[in-house]
Amino acid sequence: MRGLPRSPRRINGVRLFSILIPLALIGYFWWQSQPKSYRLIATSDTAAVTLIPCQDGYLTQEKSGWVLRDWESGKERWQVGLQKTDLSPNAHPAWSIGRRGDVFVMFLPASSGPLLQIWKNGRLTFKTTLSTWKGNQNVRDRVLNDGRVIAWTEQPPRCPAVVVEDEKIIAHGTLPYREGHRTFVAPDGSFAVVNDASDIIYTPITIADGSLTATEIPLKGVNVSVEKYPPYYEEGDLLVAGQGLTESGVIFEGKGPKSSGGWETDTVTPGGVYLLQTKGPRSRVYAPSTGEQWSYYAGEDNRGGDATMDGRYALSYFTPDFSPQAARLLQWLIQIPGVGDALPDPYTGHAGLYERPGRLRALLRIDLERWWPSHDVGSYWWFPSPDGRAIVVNLESYDGGARCLLFRW
Image (cartoon, rainbow, N blue to C red; front, side):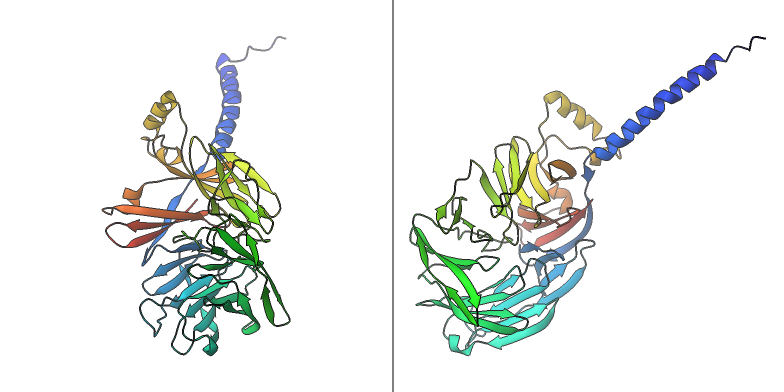
């Protein structure tokens, strides 16, 4: 007996269902592959445009002092209050924070000798007056990558220096000095440099048996940049493993400058291991000490950026590349509620987070007016969090004042 014919509607319904399921899956995975959008998590007012990214949080300078805020919510982790010197207003304290974010040091010029103080997670753990260093106001310090502290004061014939580890002074010595020039120490403590006319004095550092030894080596035709402004470390042009950057951005070591291969250095990561470099529309994250690198295409309007301390992520500033037709389509699509935040504006600058080996993971549309209404923002800086999930932005207004913003995706 022949069976009854199947309903055409059922056949068409099965076929439609079999088509919609793959399309839905394709759409879902396409949507998941698109860059995520950052959302504003927290704001705080700052007294100065000081912004240093650390492993545990980001450091800002506020009216009450220096504050480390966490990457998750922007809440305060610890605070160190403002410190005063008993010398003239021209005598300025020197401060430094380690790349992890737990060790903070303050070195203050004082009439009885400079006062060295070290905090760990906001608790004062070390304090000493270096009474034999009287009569000098140019105090300097640096928290090294391993948590040790080097403090020195700039005075002839060489800068007296001490090294502190585990709440005690473990070494004394001297660093190079040149009249009218800053003496800098590398983030791993492997060397110090000071400009000397058109040359630099390169000094490998050895710390052993209670002594700090720094032997001077002149490098001809090389200078390091001294035009560093907040939020960057003034020592930001020095790297690990005995390498640094010249004033023009070329890498140098004890034997002299090295070829850049056409790459221009934009920024150095805290800790001095990685560089963010650009070459036209491309950017790369590069570790000069090992040769490790990866790159990505940021577009013709590539304005550099910052890499994370482990070199896994890079935050890049750019305006997206679009054809006129695509730009018009995007301008229409971003008006749709719930869609606009997920799509790039073709005419607006963006901060884009790239993950090794070059995947664009998240986008932040730059909108200064919305972030800080009724303020004429004169400058701003940003850094990515170590895990790539957050961006912290510091805004400075021509009208006075500064604001810090935390975004996450």
